[in-house]
Image (tube, rainbow, N blue to C red; front, side):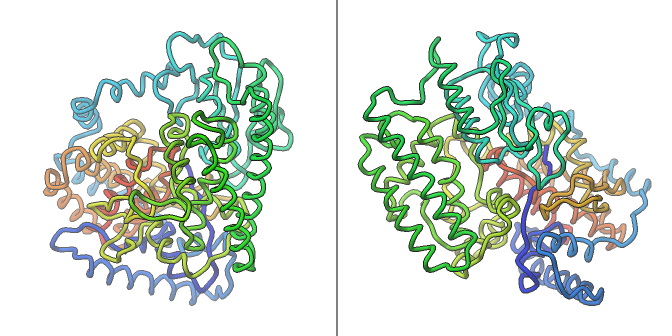
Length: 551
């Protein structure tokens, strides 16, 4: 759980802004606090930390920056310069605080879970139940047997690749049993030799179907239709020849809107490229307006929708963040693109899409290293701050601050199919408590050492070295956070205050190291890889609650 996320810097002029996003202590712009930590005092402390970090960078003589290493430069500027020793006395004191252990937390969680929620880990093991990015085997239900699986699906370990998403959705919608093998995207690190023997180019997705290797997403999609079109498998291709001809035209349109998006997102002629994109998007809108249903070809989802979905989803996220252009709106907000929004609504009723859908934050940190960079426009700054958790659109709080605003202040529709806020908090606790040892070790990279060799994604560091000194502190705080998500902040306030006091008493460097580690973890919660968006929002906000007490 929780491998690296990715991101990109914007150059020297954006040092202050990036310091609010990277693996540093200067990330929180607004948090829920106790009386001793008002939002204003937190912001004042963060300003001091940012200024100190920039001064250290300037003093080091580094006047030019590689945008793909900028975050790591700033990370080094604020972290302790020497490895911290393990403080056994501190750890003993922390462990004496009566915060429930992980066994007790799991027991408390199970008492409030539904039957389906309690079956999650068992279903993962046997490949059944509702789909999850954590599945390694997908049988859907007990009528399918593992020996009958004919497909091995190689997809990205980040659960983000748009080309993998097309295939993933199709497998789920057609309910074809398959095995999953996860492979890094290039910016996350090297690909294993075992995979390169199957796919020498290293490209994903790959599917092995009945022993034959298919190395491109479209080839896989058509093979699925050819080989799994009977025996109760759903067809995603229209039977009518006229409808098939229209499908071909729509697929050409999909490539046109993709090209227009790429030019605007990465190009340096924003006015011209915006006009080209809006013109093409209007054609997409017209096609959906003229459809006899909410999907591109009518009332039923087809492969046309699955071809459009990964990129329309990423367009909605990235153009808001980088350009301030909103095509996907929250309920009740007027839009020039009502048919496109109805299409999104229709897609979000499908479990196959719900499973694979990502959030705006994940998209906007995963896209730049894949594309070699994205160009920013001033209109996007307000939305960028909100998506990155810094400040709500209305300016009243941090957007990853409790209580969370609906639809992230109106810019990203809530995932209503996931249930209420308590359901989201239960999911977050399940994911953390189900893998707590690995998560504690992963988070402690924030106080550790950079790995060698580095990789191109700024927030990815698969070879990083963890800091054992903060293991116990992180374990205690994550347990307190989990209790808070299950029972409410007030139920663990006394014990949390004791833990915070002990950590702060260990010195500023140590407290900073714990803040760095919690921030490192928070910024790498990936959707859908680790949990759904509602659960991720709750977990990020509760991590901020703990960070706010430390700073």
